[in-house]
Image (cartoon, rainbow, N blue to C red; front, side, top):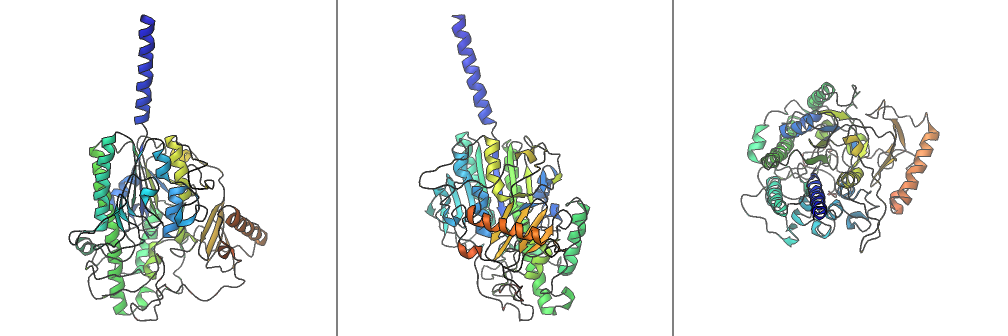
Amino acid sequence: MKIRFSLFTLFFIHCAFLDSHAVEKPNILVVMVDDLGFSDIGCYGGEIETPNLDRLARNGLRFSQFYNTAKCHSSRISLLTGRYAFQAGNVELSRAVTSAEVLGSVGYFTAMTGKWHLKEQPTDFGFQRYWGHLSGACNYYRGDKTFRLNGEPWKVPTEGFYTTVANVDYALRFLDDARQTQKPWYLYIAFNAPHAPLQPLEADFKKYLGRYEAGWDTIRAARLKKQNELKLFGKELTPSPRPDHIPAWDALPKERQVFENRRMTAIAALIDRVDQELGRLLTNLEKEGELDNTLILFVSDNGACPYDRKSPNIDGNPYDPDTTWSDSTGWAWARNSPFRYYKQNQFEGGISTPAIVHWPKGLKAKKGSITHQPAHLIDVLPTLADLTGATLPSSWPGRELEPVSGISLLPVLKGKTIKQRPPIHLLFGEDRGLRDGDWKLVSFRSHPWELYNMAGDRTELDDLAGKYPERVDAMAKQWFQMAEEVLKAPAKSRKPVDPEASPKLHPEWTDFTKPLSETGKRGDT
């Protein structure tokens, strides 16, 4: 009888251990914002008030070399699947599984709010709860016809609606659902802010009035100074100069200065509101006792956007739902300090994102530290699988899976260094690049290859292509090989680079020789 009792006792102790171990799995919160500049938030050099993100950075880990794909939908694909966009089957996700599917398979409650920008719906790819818009952009006050709630059409209210606030309203609702299940939860919030149209709340806009009258030259210089004070890069960098296609602020006509000042004021207000809403979410996690064992990752899908599309009602107020201002190439340059270029381009200004990890219970890196470990959105899924004990599947019903291209960053979160990683492939449209160790090969809109050594030239000022032609040839060969064999990129995306650079700029960049609001063609988001 005693033996039987002991065996039963051991059995129940073992079960209790397993249950407690399961409970110890961290909750996971992934936050992606839209078109954020590298230096926009306080802990990356910005003057915009982001106390909640700054707090996460102060008590967590920041990456100085974390890459996205420089574009909206492709970054979402890489974040969710651990694969490059073409490799995953592009927006159809036909050759990949998502983080929601992987984490759901090991008992996680999965939920998403915000921008989807892929085919089908999140509920078709493992998310048990979803509220948001399927489109790439929407009116902040009026939404659009693509809003869904758990797979069903959702009608946007005619009054009292604002997307950034609603994203967190529904996130909190879904967390209540998750807690009822007593399962660990995975929540993905994809804010559409600060993507155009630039439509802040009135109070947020008025908070920043007058702060940008000094112009982009002054603001960028101040941000660089703060970045150096933060020791963001481990050493002081030589900033990229203002490009020829952007005039000095003092050379702008007064009318344009007034509008550009108000335009940046609207952008700052949009970012401030994201931080306020994240603060509301963090307060809830603290109240529920969940903050310590919640891994939080904050990233952007690309650098600041230079697309200066139509801006109706220039003389109006941006908090009027009929006012739909677009972005500014001049401010995009300032916001991506200290780097070159913008959203879509594979230079550092297009692909570098602020990346903050906060996880008090599991993070072993020193609080407030900065890692210079190169990383990419393709690393997110392998990392989440690693820390939750999930298996990355090699097969999935109805899909022919390609292998995951990312690596686990868990060693970095534990305070270690990954000495060597596979090359990072960079591609969107005609813009392309390859990061291999300290070397980076890059092409602007299929112009001739440029070569930079990131260890000493992160701002890509000293093109070494002429000095090391053999390295250029070897890395170009590797780029094309990966594009074909790993990404499965279509032939049109694998065309040779042009023999000479074209003087033509992107048709949607601000043309400062034209009147206000006279811009290039309407493009994709």
